[in-house]
Length: 81
Image (tube, rainbow, N blue to C red; front, side, top):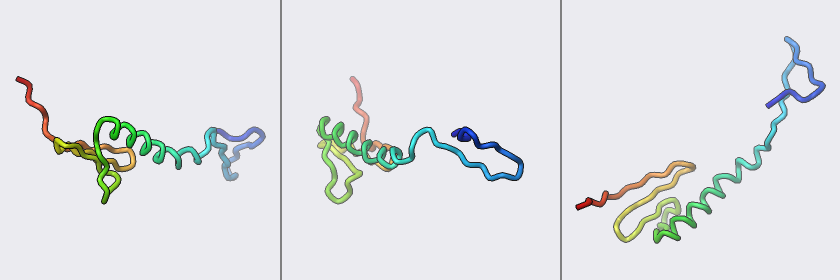
């Protein structure tokens, strides 16, 4: 953020700042992330839990949970021979 042109900052004055980007895009980002993750998970064979749309699972009991911008993976590691 920067002070808009023509605004002088003095010791007793309130400061007004101008945003370079609008905050509207930030409100949309979680929705876009959810759409992208849903597409990725379904492409790779995971199913969305009907009761909780932030939980995805597959046949081998691997579970992904999504909360805002956090992903949690619960499952077993495959043992290599």
